[in-house]
Image (cartoon, helix red, strand yellow):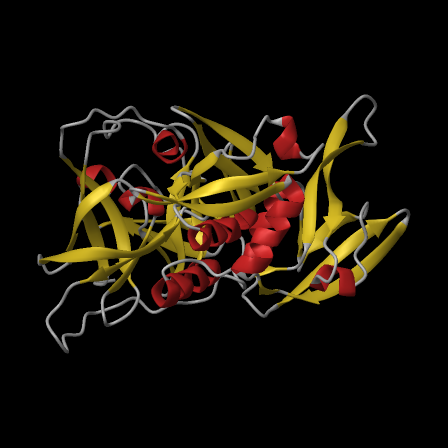
Length: 404
């Protein structure tokens, strides 16, 4: 337990006071005022002797400087190794003397948890450092969030979790790390808290440590939500519809067809396109994706490998989706990405994009070369949406495309 720690974050401006609900802290959009610096507190856990700290992405997302306070009272500087906002996870590295080793919390497993199993939450609720609470696993595979942002397949617990617990460890009675505390619903101390399963958290952390980002595989399936009538009169529910299967993809080789409905991924059912994408991200690069499809009245199993999506392939797929052909143009100040042509009748043509427009940003990331555009194309494919900041003369506006 001595491996539990507190992350102090220097941020640009205050977001919300400590009395606000943690759920608002996670999913709301607090107002920021420029020119102010405050200290923000969160929790985390050291997961390796060389000082890697696992915490929530929202704990560090607006931070400028970071310090980790250990149980023995030491405060050490740390830096962000990488973040994955899609799962609300981040990895920091404590800056230590050479050959110094830190105590760390050994990982357990989250794939064999049982409802009713005793768990312990550790963190810094309301700034009260190293607080320990206990409870049980209340439920598994929970969804928490709203239509704008959701987290899937969470551990639900009644161990008391409050603002400041963000990123802290959830452990079993053997003292093994089984989850990362992330969210609550309802009034404070209502006994409904959620943690990210450690199996997922460690896979993501490994990618962040090795590559600085999560490496996701590609199967070539595009999906969307399809409302269908349920057995209850006058009601509807959402199914996951395969809207396209890309030629030459692993999905095409596995026999997946446009119009199939995705019933499950791996061992878990899927109830929305967003949940499908989330579960696909859990499959490591090179791993096997197992689907159960509904094709008419028949249930059809499909198995395929998750392969790496190269920047060139991602750029080609975006060109097919949008109708945009891009190039580079040299200016006095450097290079810009420019629209070379727009395919007639394409989504790009419908938005009014024209040859000669400049592409300044892709999904809020600045791009100034084709290499940067192709790298951003991979990220856009993973996100399922392409948002461009387009400049024409002195005017600029954002346009969005679904590119799942």
